[in-house]
Length: 422
Image 1: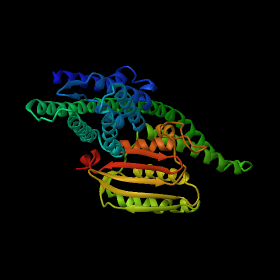
Image 2: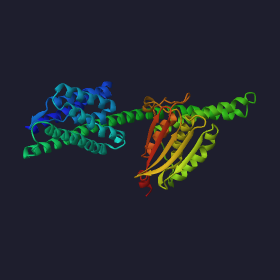
Image 3: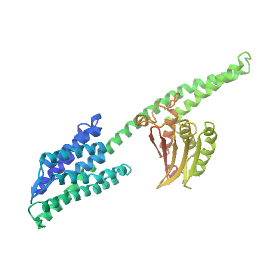
Image 4: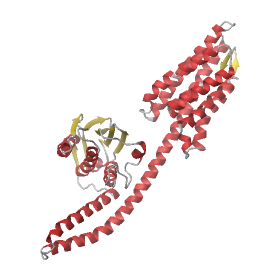
């Protein structure tokens, strides 16, 4: 009978995940920590109300929703779920009420501590962390269940039935954590895939539009530039206007080239070179640009790895990222470049001590016409990200308002370029 009852609890535990996944996934309330806390709190309360009573003990999975709410909803969600458990335990009453309070507070200690590191791990490891965290409340609850025997009138008798109950309770508690964690991770992965598909479709559309417009505009610009160059030697009256006109035409051509590069980056010269040398060149190249505004630019090379790609295109992308970091940093600020090897990848990490960005601004990085600079178009960042991604790499932005921004550029040590040159 305990198996059937606790299996019902497993369904109650995964009900919140199913609820906000299928009913409220595309609505803002579905991601609210307060709403998630209420859902998981209701789940924990239902587990307590439908607890299985046998051998003088109450068996339920009340702490599984607590662990899940802390990990997948955040501290606020966890506190709401904990409050729901305490209120429900108070309503149920009993002689060992204070033991229920102690167990609830003790059970949430480990999940709250592990939450600081939880989102640093990849999905598979997060499931393992959830299992580890699920062991702790199960252990605490078993201690409380056993303690109630000593406090009560009946003496503790570890017969076969009690041992069976403890075994079933422990196994189903962990299974509930595993099932719910897998469902949560599946939802997270699906949402990430949706965002990536939307972003890819948007970039593809923009790329086609940029290519078509750029080709159409470049042709008349080339003709105008050619005729102006011919006329410059004949008309002496307006000679002083020609340099200005030609420089503006050249600037327009550069913008069109950026659009074409975004639409389809061309890697003309593939070569193998030490990435550390390129990082040092970038630091030397942009150091005067940084010193002009009183900004300290430093580099740290902790890798001697070599990569195979178009050196000039990669240099262009990294220069744009570094210039953005310098321009976002106030006087007497610092910009640092760090090169490390991370498994099968090499990482170039650029940090600045600028004003940072909000979550909304971070989510729009790489979008056309979005820039934190007053006269920026966002095209340079788009092109840089496009170039890195075309090389099989990835660009990640993390930022805190008032503390600065970190840009991590990851590039594979082995890629399709290397295979083509073999």
